[in-house]
Image (cartoon, rainbow, N blue to C red; front, top):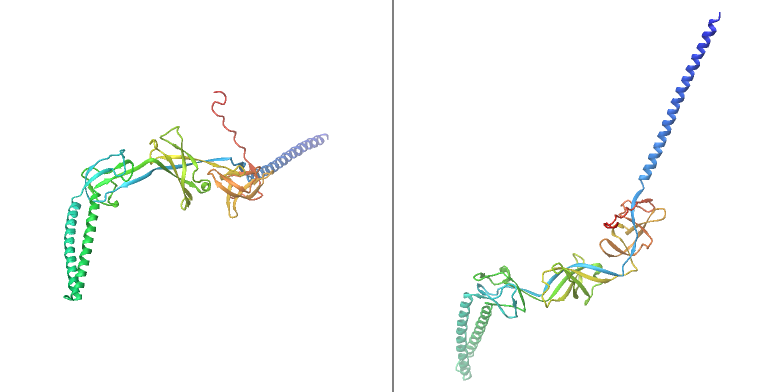
Length: 398
């Protein structure tokens, strides 16, 4: 009669163990569920925070700086001779002889070459004969006219006949003048057989040789010679519009040439065009320099240094901090909370990497460099950490 109670206790024990196992499994499942939910919420919050953080634009900044008290403007210059002329032939023929070669100094009127022109010589002799014929005809017509005037006074001839003789004399006079003019023309053409230097200078080119066919005129080909007066040189510079108002006559500038290392020459502004070239918005400036010793060569390329007065009351900002908007030129300025405020500026001179600002920014403003096109007023940004400057070689004594 004692066995049933023992079985009941065993069943109850198994029952209790099953419940504990079930509770444990449920607790683990709930824990895993709670951990998963918390993890997902944390990940979502972290992702939202990361997305919000990534949406903040990272920018580089710069500060305005004051303009220097003086500006140094460096521009390319083209050197030309004070006078330079291409010498062409004025008569046809063949080159008989040349007297000067390249590099030869010449004086005004000195022969450079001689041209053999037999056709011109023949035409000259024909013109001399034509003038002789015209002179003889005129003298006969003049004598006849004088005689008929005497006969008309005694009414021995009619007025009509006397007028005909007077008209014939006038026509013969005109023919004589025409023949004389033609003879003078051919004499001038014959004088062009001698090619002469137009001024004192140096022969810089000789493009002909003995026996070469010579054709008169500029359109016939290359010039026979080129002569340059190099005792004084002209230097032409194209000055950009922002600096045009600072250039004036008598101003001095420095010249540096690659073929004269270590030397600096001084030139003076002689003339300006007083007008800007519409295509380039530049002012053509002519400087002159004495070259009595012949150190400098025409056709050279040089660097021209202008020392211009600056204005330390103006500010300069990087050109890549400027926004081109419909409202005009603007810059993005940051406040203490790194929020953007757009300011409209008035531009002065353009220095390439920097521009002069006449109004719109203050010395203490923080400017956004390379601002994106989408930047707007009130936008919060993050300032990028500027990389540390690299150490210069030898900074540690090495």
